[in-house]
Amino acid sequence: MIHGRAMVTDGQGGFRLEAIEVDPPQPGEVLVALRASGVCHTDYDSMRWGNTLIMGHEGAGVVAGVGEGVDGFVPGDHVLLNWAIPCYRCFQCRQGNFVLCEDKPRVPHARTRCHGNPIGRAFELGTMSTHTVVPPAALVKMDQAVPFASACIVGCGVMTGVGSVLNVAEVPPGSSMAVLGCGGVGLNVIQGGRLAGATMIIAVDVNPARLEMARRFGATHSIQAERAMMRASSRRQQRSKRSPAAGALIMPSSALPCPPSVPLPWRWCAMPAWRCR
Ligand SMILES: [Zn+2]
Ligand SMILES: [Zn+2]
Image 1: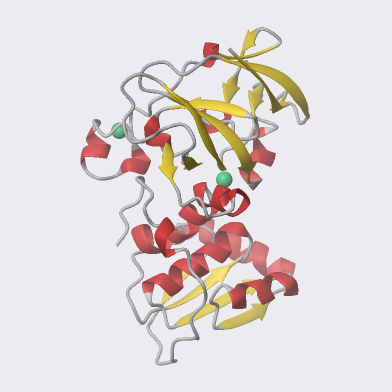
Image 2: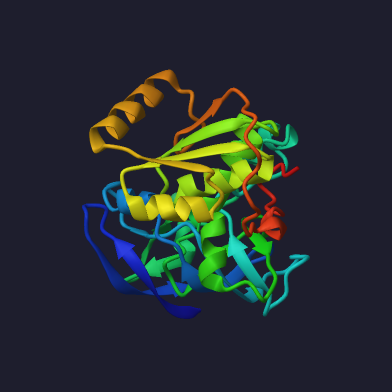
């Protein structure tokens, strides 16, 4: 048994650092010693889900043990965690829609305990902890040169933003797009636009510092909006359901030249939950 620590929410708006116990990995499971966890707005929401649970769903760490029958991972591997865990067998997985898996593999709650009681983990991961046990399908092996603190956000903010552009909106090369809100997901919608070959990427946010970042991530234009305008746009988008995530609106193609290259994490496009092209 592993004695670790985790950030545990009471589900009523509070959280605290607690001691946890984690059982060793059983056949078909992997034990990960986490080194970094992102903080997503969903983690903030999770503090009011009404359940005690270990917080965090975007993390990176080192394989600390493997159960029988696990191929492809050995102790010492650097990995990032993916909450869209596919079973590879259900109808949706067979269609290639791994993020819609109908039979997501789970490690039973009873195998992780806090004060002797079984405890759930956010998105079956619970990355704000020192240790977690997951199925191999929740892991992506990564280059050891990638810092853990950078890798961890690939597991939510990056895959949500980039995946929305490449896999949901399927932005064609030469498109124009506007991104409403340039936080973690919005910046990655912008990166996705660059990967897709969009020629005009308009970043819209109320915060000038975020717009500066948006330009570094590949936005060709930026507009500083008023808060009232952003709220109205957000309501309109929710009603029209046009937005795949984070407010990406795809508009008719423009003739503007492509902006200069920005560094993009090409090699991270190996997520098993993606249909990367
Ligand atoms: Zn998230
Ligand atoms: Zn499935």
